[in-house]
Image (cartoon, rainbow, N blue to C red; front, side, top):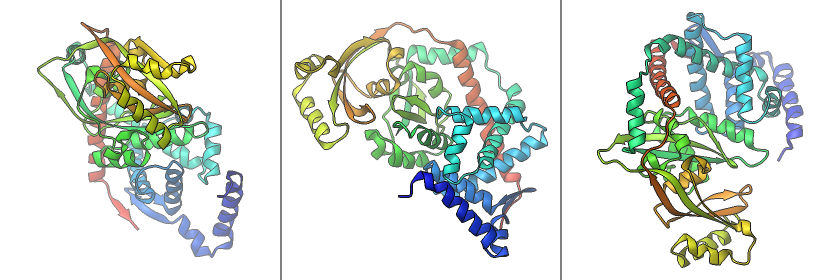
Length: 407
């Protein structure tokens, strides 16, 4: 494998061959129009750059196809923003770049350096950000005044979550983000979060997810919203079927959830004030030996109390057991617990960079009559969901009215 330190010199040499040593027609073709969207041109070079960026991010789907689709949509968005006089300022663009890089725990300069090592120039990333910032500003300006979320809307949403009579059908993707690979995992998650079809998300789950549900395309069973981590409730409620949450950082990984269906039932399920669980840590991660040990333990226990026998004589930290409020439980553990009934077991999680398998058992749930809810947060989630619906319809309209020519 070529060391990363050699990628940039090789790219520079290759560029020199292409642009300086190649025949004039070959160099010219690189910057020749490939697609024309209304009056805006997409060059072969831009397609190549976007494809490189998608490959660098290990984005799902065919990079060449996705590059064309993304750039066409971005031209439509920029065209509309420009027509409305809403192109972002230099400061807004730089803030957008810093925000995106910050999601990978980098500053802009560090993030651009990572891209450059993979042969992606800074302008490619900058134009990607310009499109996103422009579209966000246009959607808010055009549709913001139409989106009204009143107290009655919030009351209905709170009634749904508070009474526990809403259940959801979700799909999940958990992308590992081991030390040194956080930026790559974040970029891949950002691409997945833009998906709008069940099939595309399922393909990504099979390819990238580290959970047992990956083989099922990430599909989870119907679950009452009250069983899911409270910190996820506004994000889940903000989704329409097919939509995906923004990337959610968890320990050593990044999570995404797609809404497949949502329904309000007539029978309420209880809210919970506390959840008791036990986590027994097995060395070896998801190796066959560690998984075999987990199966052997599961076959020999009936309750959480039985785990004390296996932990006897080992360091105290090998077994963690306690009762916590739902909002205090780590998101990844809370999601696994949501799938379990009392005394059921999950081996879908790891710790220590994948070196330790988590044998997780639900000990019990304590019902509560009611839980406090953040009205402002619920209102923002409802507003964002409605804005997203407007934005999707507007983009489809722009595409149907556009003149798109592929050379």
